[in-house]
Image (cartoon, rainbow, N blue to C red; front, side):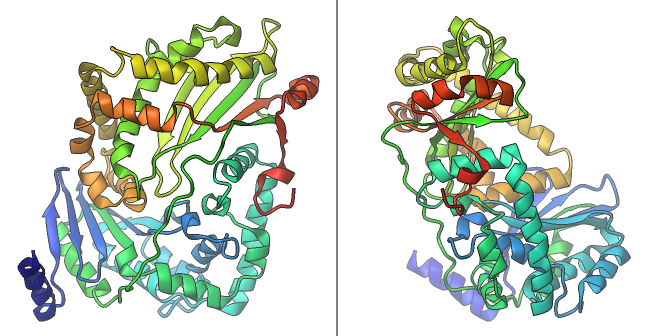
Amino acid sequence: MKVRKFILFFCFLIHPFFLFSQKTDVDGLYRYTLPNGLELFVAENNSAPLAYIEIAVRTGAVSQNPQTAGLFHLYEHMMFKGNAHYDNQQEVTDALNKMGVGEWNGSTGIDRVNYYFTIPSNLVKDGLEFWSYAVRTPKMDEKELENEKGVVLSEINGNFTNPGTILFAGLSKNLFAESPWRLDSSGNPDAVRNATVAQLKQIQSEYYVPNNSAIFVGGDVHHEQIYKYVKKIYGDWKPSNKVPFAAPPSQAPFSKDVKYIYKNPGTSKDFVSLSYYLRGPDGESDSDITYSADVWSFFLDDPEGIFVRTFTDEKTLEIPDPDYIGGSYYTRRASGIIGMYAAMLNTPVSTPLEKSEKFMSLVHNQLAKKMLESKKDFSAENIRLAETKMQDSKIYKMETAAGILSDLSAVWASCGSDYYFNYEKNISAVSEDDIKSFVNDYINNKSGIVIVSLNPDVYEKYKDSFLKAGYLEMTSENSFWWRKD
């Protein structure tokens, strides 16, 4: 091992542009790693004379603290305000128009910040150069920063009346009580208001480095030509000696369930909407368990499976159809979440409070027990069938180069590229015992947060009964972690 490491190190010394390349199992998809740690992925598809280019950085809300919450989003906005090559926003826009960019964008999520556009394939080198200037040499002008703060603050203010944003903010504040800001890419208005150029440059030096970034190119391109371009344009990008690690919060934040009711104008008067959330495994620290979680979540759609039948067989819940009950597990770098959802009819058979209490009783007293004792649902035969269907669904994402690379980019940010390329192999190794171990470790005897969403008229009718039963009201005022309760 020491000899092999020495040989690789020696190769880097004598050939500074040494590249590691590998043909993947995905037809037409190639991967490379430059000596500075920058990863490159190329998906060849000559069905149209176009090229998709994306540059992604493994950062976002997950990297925030209370003082920087919102600054990664602000940084994304500042990327288009000028750089060492394009002096201002107008010149940036002119360059995009010159390349024939019809649609371009950037986004700041929980695990990833990414920038992308589609251009004519004969301009792919120009596109790679454009993103190099934008990512590596942003100007961060003081005046532009002050102007852009207003734009970001208006986006934050717009979230105060958005039911989906309020619900997710309340979920994050409770399920990740130690660090809810790490799921809030919009951020803290005070942090945005007080942001400085020095803070943004600190973000650049720590996170916008090649060994924390990846480039995705797809379409009417040739992989060898693309890596030659990338080698020339990005080869001198200096890596960082240390990229911060996203340590996960507690796996078991509650000693008992936390219960909320939410007045949601988007909920029909005819339904009681319920969501229940538990902490799940994380992509960065618990990647081996995420495969079992993915297979487990696939079984939640089976209308004859344990999950659906546990709730639809209970007539007082009045779940009208298997399509009205479901669940999920979504892999994130350090904030994995397990969700269960139900839409129940609002009739005199049972009150909304009774429905919620019965649902939670089934979760805690029957669901996990049935799953752990099942001889059928998680049999080897059913697991293989689930894996086949999961692979079939992935094919739809791979119809275009942009579809392949967008999916790969998201997985790269949360779990790394090896996770993506080894996914089918690791999924096929999941056993019945693995799934039941996941159920036992993450669902059985675990507590979480339940949120009952009611139409405003229904809410007022049953509000007092919920409050007497220990439920709390979820509002815009108490959902956002940075607001004082």
